[in-house]
Length: 117
Image 1 (spheres, rainbow, N blue to C red):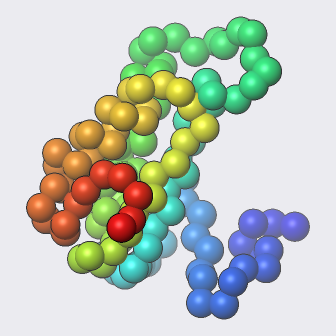
Image 2 (image 1 turned 90 degrees about the vertical axis):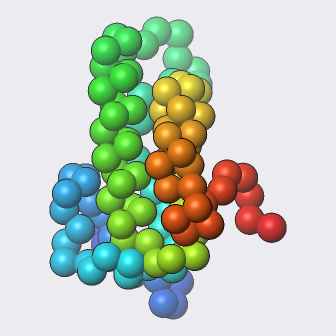
Image 3 (image 1 turned 180 degrees about the vertical axis):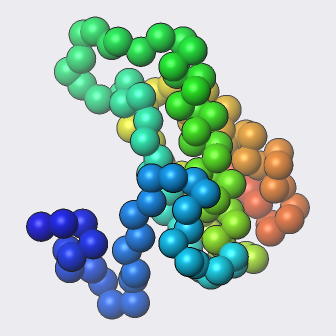
């Protein structure tokens, strides 16, 4: 069953976007909560004994994820919650991107790292 047609909880509008500049007509500051599960290198999936990713490719995917973070933040209401999730162990795609986002938006909407209180 296509993702957009799968059952979802009441009040949840699924949105699938693969291009960071395409927000499909959503106005800025539209959502209380955004779950961003961007494409990643999948270095955390097991069992894998060999990966074909090069360092330049890993850095490009981290940059792409940052563009998706920018789009997600733009769609988030002030005081909203952004959850960023990947299935990789790459620091460039995880800790570095989270640090980048916190450095960029810290204080603008009460941005902070870690789980909700």
